[in-house]
Length: 478
Image (cartoon, rainbow, N blue to C red):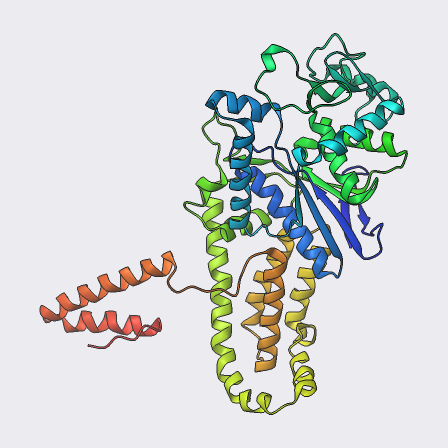
């Protein structure tokens, strides 16, 4: 199995530092507003990644942080004249609700920054003791010059970092040095949440939150760190510098994985352009599973362009797969009923052996090549676009193959696995969905038209409409 690492810019064979266990950390949200569809894209992608790793037999612990103390939270709380802690709790709750609606259900633990202040202070103190950080009257800063390979993830030379925008602070040794702790004793900061520390009352910087959390739960090194492409610099490079400096161990992680940007109709999403879409707004018109299929139709590392046309196509594709499964069930049920008495008569061991025959590894070779294509695509850096294409090529090939009930059950077994891997229930076909509801309305209109035609004695035209409906499998009785 191959995984692309942002650090090496290459696909590498996947292996774990912990035998068959994978430790996965993904940067979580800063909870000052509702999550948008760009967040949804990232978290759906890593949810899929964890699901497939588990399908492959790995035990995966997925850790995600919640940044519940930050300038953005404090500023938004001041704008709305509310307590920043209450604001953060409100949007954390809404974020968790949004993820549930997108079926992002694989995170094992959400770790709030404010629950790990002791670990943050301890890590900062060790960085000071090792000579990588220093305290001033404004806070504590990481001395970038002490880490000669700072910027290696973004492939930036330390001598070129002066061009990066950093808040000017004359107390720092260099404009590039970033905050580990921010002192907040001045009057203009009154009302902000603060914690006592050896360097004065204040709060943590953004970057140190993540390494303090991952060190507590994973130790100084782990397998995979994920996040959006926009976090590579300075955030992820700062994490690398902090943890490798304090532990003396390299690398911090084996694989850095990043999701591509999400644009809306070809433009960067922003409130100023009026194309900012929250997950909550999206779900007013589309299901979470439709959005998942839209997201997974593009490789997680590639940019993705959001549009109504693309969402409608994803909705149509989802409906087509579910219709295929519904038709599959219609073929299975008569054969299964015929074998039901036989299956009931078996004891447990015999039944288990019989059910193993439903393994999709043994089905017709014409269809098996499409199943193999699905898994080979997933093994190639989680290439979901090719995997989804394999599903449709399977459906197309299915029409030309004569199968018995055991093969049909094996196919349904495969689609159950595909549903679990992609986080989309393809086996669910709801005749009462909105599209089906529209079909019922249409049939009612057609029935009214036929009644009027018959009342006007236009029987030929009425019968022609009836015959066409019968051809479509719709029984009409006058």
